[in-house]
Amino acid sequence: MKNNILQKNEIYNRQFAVLIFFSALIFKLSRLPRLVSVTIGNMVLMVELVLCIIDILLFILIYYYISINGFELSQKNCPIALKILLVLLLIIFTGKFILYYSSGATFIISSLFRSIAPYIIIVTFILPIFYLAYKGIVSIARTAEIFFILVIALLFFDYTFLHGEMDFDRLKPLFTMSVGDFTVNMNSFGLWIGDLLPFLFIKMKKHKFPYVALAVPVTYGFIILNIIISIAIFGGALFLIENILVIIPTFNEFASTLGKLEWAGLIPWFIMIVIYLSCLLWGCFEIGEFLFRKRTVFAGIYVGAIIIFLLSVKSMQYVINMATTQFVSIAFWCGNSILPLALLLVAIISKRKNEKQKIMPEKENAPILLNAPGKHEVTSSEIQEKNSVNSTTIVLPAPSNHGGEK
Image (cartoon, rainbow, N blue to C red; front, side, top):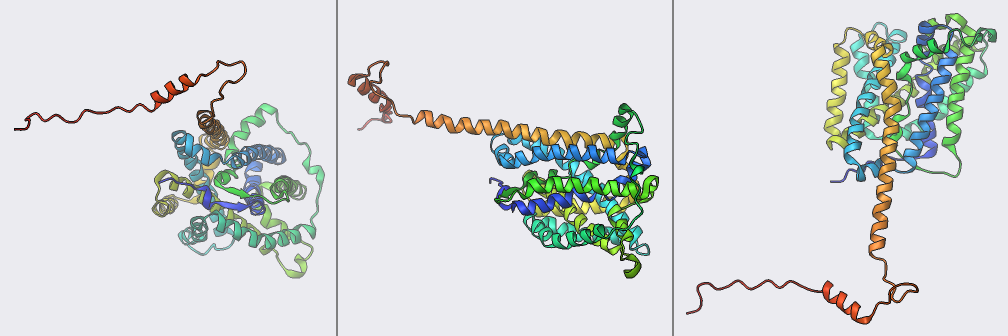
């Protein structure tokens, strides 16, 4: 039975633009600035800038892969190579999901529910994510589109009435170490690239308005703007800020009137993290369905194994710390950058094979031109001879009667 994933994963490009905004934004502003500040000090802006540029380049590959129906072509013409790459991609997605989920659950426990046992948060937090992922990317996209207006309204409120003491001299100097040392330290942040890779399996319904082309610069521009504002406000104390999206609303002009406004940052943060983790888990389900055919069975076993793993570790902070270890980070660098390129190359090869297969039947069915100028003149006897050869049938002898008739 042919497994055509793209037929059920078709979304509008305006919905894709919303998913890009949520997915690219959420984890680059949640924990990453603090980790960078702790690791290499006053280089947060440069690290974020490099990661955003790499993400944009990867998105170009992803968008081209989607536009040529790369998954469908590879499935038809290079299925073995596709399966090998998807197994590797499933490993990367699994690692990403576990680390990102641990980061989100840890923040929920430390900020909102300190008196509740961690295992309760681990189990309950995954329920909406699992539900959306199992329902599919169409349901995720519709949900994101519904909540997008609320997210934008709250972010507009948070940043329009921002009243913090900003000193942009804190951005200087941009480089506090050599390029070589900076490159070596960048090895610790491989997890935070390739956040848009789950969208390799979608198919877009295009509008006349270029929503996706607008979403990419707006999203990454907003990320850089957030980092600039955060450094201008907190300076060297940025390593104390666990979540920029949640702490920024506390500097709102209305905070003195309305009280502490962390909720104005928590709501957008929670919506975006659920949507993105759903997309990531959905990508795992799509790969599992393609490889093992049984989506429901795979989804249940897969999520159950993740929950058991998270409940069995000493602490989720231990899992989060694994993200910046040398081996894990380099594995993410390689997986997030090489795998989409390899998938695109397989898709291009498959596309050429597909084009050749279309050309061959056309040549075989092309009419023979009789007495074409400059060619050998075909006589009627030659045509009759060719037809007689083509119509020759092999007559098998009738089975002999060895006994004979008496």
